[in-house]
Image 1 (spheres, rainbow, N blue to C red):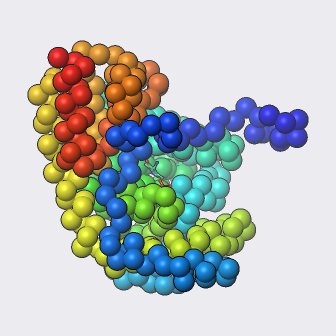
Image 2: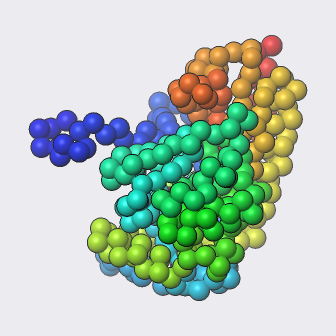
Length: 350
Ligand code: PMP
């Protein structure tokens, strides 16, 4: 740390992304990326000509992409925001709407706490229930920024849309953010509620179900007023927040919806297959609607299992928080990757 850093940032702990090791080839089941490439039409869109066009700035209004997303999801372009990964729209939401404080579950996406720290927002962390579910009553009538991932991470567990509606309805003077990064793997979206409530912000990403984590593209839906606020923040920080190539690939991705639907169904099948195999091996597997499962075994400590798998070339995500340190979060890869994962588990546990 230099002596120039503002005092407010000195004690701040930054977000730690999942490992992206370069030392050897791993079966990478640690950061919830898709194991599949983008659709062929998306890959083909990346031409030398497009790279040459990088001399020009990208469209700060992201008009084409917003129109395509609006068309696909049956909303108006004024209801759509696009961002550099969904991390960026979450960042903007904390910056814009965290004035009265923020509330989120104690076990959820680790970045929420970092954003709260970054903007010195008072954060109330509500413990998940014993079974890792969310009791929606605890988020009602807070009238401060509410942030819930649905499905939640790292559990993969979901909250019914009727319960989300209760949360939104009971916090009329605050924004409720529903982070739907993982909704495409069997979850239920609360998107239709944006028509009824002007305080709901639904965030999404191309990083998981759209096989584009490295492209850094997120999006969100809300009332035109909330979107206008987010645009204000964007134009005050980085107007060209999404590069030209990613904007183009995003548009092509929306056009290839069928391909991605098919890949999501494959992930769901592989998830069911993997969960069944793990349960047979004696694992506890939380019920997941995401592209990962959260699992533990009595046969080996969570941290030790993580390290053992890593030594054998399989990366999973382990968290040191005492409440979940016996678990590991395992991204659903291809069937072949999951077979290798299950075989390795048998080798180290049986
Ligand atoms: N929300 C949740 C719950 C996540 O797990 C992630 C991925 N780490 C994100 C948002 C952000 O993803 P991205 O910035 O790649 O869209």
